[in-house]
Image (cartoon, rainbow, N blue to C red):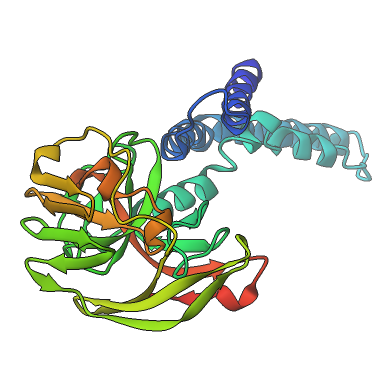
Length: 321
């Protein structure tokens, strides 16, 4: 068993290393699920087979020691050194291959359940959600707010809340579902979303927008026009780059693209049923639904709601809209 365990551990380590170096496309949910299954099998084997065997060996050792003491007592020898303590400890001790599998099972399964059904941490890799979320913000995502889904396959098994306009949502990137993206919900199923001359209109009603002082982007070392926008019951800030044109260059082919009309002023899209229109708050620096299309309901991961750490700026910790 030690050889088999070494091979399994090496396989997990090799997969992680290949993922880190970019050789393979990783899937942390799948890896955590497999780790839970493998360590769970070892945990069951330890509890119902290996541990009882070790206990039987200890019992046999103690029985043999007791029998020896009785025989010595018949010979008048009552002072006998107990030399079985070390042997007893060696027999009952868990071998390394069980310590690294069955011993880790409770921790791994708790992490798997918490991450799959309650809260999942994410790291913000880009500036598409500035000023709401900054690069390197570590955020928490509520996995049950939009319903309970089975891990790995992401199939919903229990309904909860529906996404609302203004929600910051994590979802599986439609052109490449192995990647997680984060954007703001702008259009719901059936909405007609118009983004023309850098202003949003939903179902013919302009989204309220109020100018704010310019935002200084410390990474880009430049200022951007900042606005306060209210969508649904959410009020948040957004950025516009005056040097960028209003039209959408290089939009991909995507399902239901016929629902969109592109022009020099921007784009107008009718959101299909079961889909959502997503945009980044850094409007001129965000690849979102304007470029790659609508997010199907099956791709939803959860609702982002809290920055739990930013090692470069501790003031970032807290909830956000």
